[in-house]
Image (cartoon, rainbow, N blue to C red):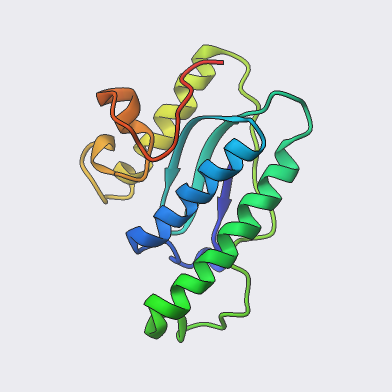
Length: 155
């Protein structure tokens, strides 16, 4: 799935903001006993491949992830980046109201989606290799390194 910051603002430019999104993802995965197969946190949007033990859990998961991260991001922006927070109305949402999901139906499709996600920072010109982007699961897959949350490579 993919979701974006409200009005594609770069609210996640700061690594501490990206870290908030990853931490909330990890705690929500634990709460719902679900798994993450991969993720990439970009300055203005998020990609994640998620698995749930029961059907129909994505909507609740997304609501919780976006609400909890929104609250924490607004606190962070007000306290740590007040000059940036002053450039827009902090009462506006952090996230666009919707998200885009895509069902993975094969190992091939999983590999395609992971490659697409992991190449995002490269295509944007932020890094030359996916493993250089630290807010991504690319390092898990390519270097077997921890990435802040547990990654489940296959379900």
